[in-house]
Length: 146
Image 1 (cartoon, one colour):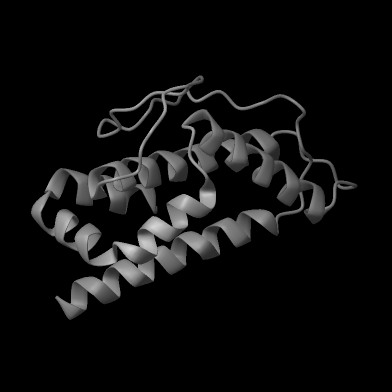
Image 2 (spheres, one colour):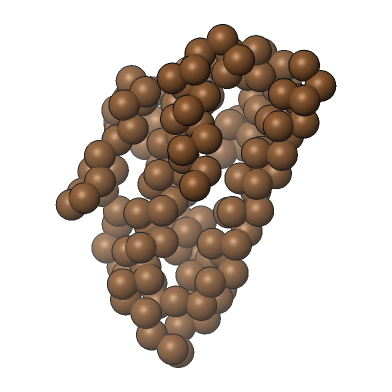
């Protein structure tokens, strides 16, 4: 159990570092908003919710669904922003665009980013246990971090 807890804490920290790393890239920002499904992208299979649907974060499975979906979305956003690379674009501009897209993602689920983070902190044992018992979710979780 201690190993799984360490594993989970590691991945939560990895998630935070990934967000910080995305914020540190020096790339141009497109003014268009990201769609939650675009060319070459499909919502991960475990995700049972949709954009525009109010999500009540009250279970580990919903947390994992959002976590996985968000990770895939951030990859899409990074690619979209990177496609418009311009040497004069600042890291701050890239960071602001990523923040804007993350905020839009959570808003589309009627959920606050802080609520999401607090859930992971306050319910880490339940999340660990859920992942231990649900291999499909665990695989999706791990794959989203690649």
